[in-house]
Image (cartoon, rainbow, N blue to C red; front, side, top):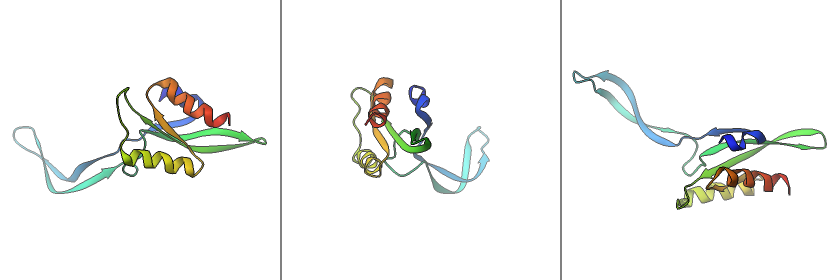
Length: 115
């Protein structure tokens, strides 16, 4: 994330589900949730780990280009939803890709900027 902040603003996009409701402490120190309901956080399923914008300049004007970077380990595999999200961002004119290192993340952005 820090490796690409020089290009614009990038944020961690935590996606997940938890439970919400009125909470009470139990005698053993636990927490009990009354009338629990699911609470979904983050963007849509498959949205990238890092999202934000990269600032570009065209004819003296500055523009924010939506950016989405999926972070994977060397052997990690993107889900079909993650691949679809990346494709959708690219089709709409944004910057998107999968990185396995800080250098990969920078390259995704630099390729877009240097087109």
